[in-house]
Image 1 (cartoon, rainbow, N blue to C red):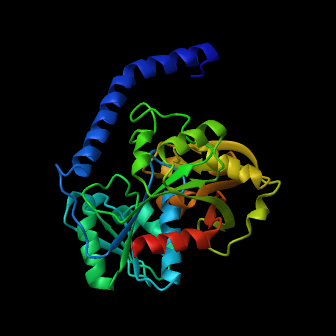
Image 2 (image 1 turned 180 degrees about the horizontal axis):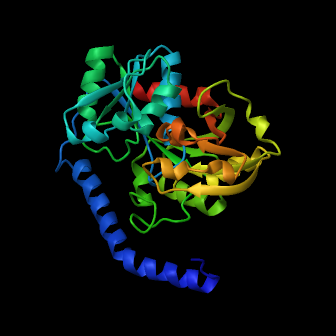
Length: 350
């Protein structure tokens, strides 16, 4: 059912009225949880190795997993023994002490249904670096140190991981979204109030720059943090069924459909349109959607070519797509003045 502009405004107002109290309670709980650890009422545990956390204030914030992988790879290239830790899902989440080795740095030893999409992406983007999953990041760190001689553990989505002491906290901010919707869950995307930026050591603006108002907010709450900028750059388009990849320029002038479960599907649309593609249809699903055959049935009827993300590709069985031509857009993170970031990071970890 389509709503006209007035009806849509009324619907949004009703949703805000209904969900606002829940957002206020969520925010109060987030502040209390952080304060209890900050003031020692609850104890954080320290690992015998260095810990770098990469996280965000907002749910589904762009670039967190890619930033974690980039930092791990960069430190690895400088000679450090690094491991990556993703959040526990499935069995690893239910068994709090369980630790799953997703990749030993040479071979991937798990699958999406067990390890989760983020862990699989970390493994794909971090050859030579072990990737582990566990509900309790302390146990993950102990296992990484014992099994792989890890010196530095990089946490993916770890800014709210208060039970574990971290040496460096890095927060990634989506440049186009910024702080325009600062409501907390469930009304908005934020998991903590913006003032939590006071607790971070570094802030990376992904696909920025921020607009003037958002830059003022960052300056107000994160003035003491090291700043860096990064962009996600498409590097290849590969068939979902497997095979040789093409350069992203093959999308120039192509009529495409998009399929994703991104919180902000406009980010994928903007990317393919910047490559010259014409988006003729979209299938957007909710975050963490569990794909099934019916979700990708008869795609070939609506567009000659479909584009999806690496995260979605992990969730879609190639056997489901039938005659459809589905391609995966591979993305690489490029950090401006990367040497400065790495020098600062190594100095902070000494």
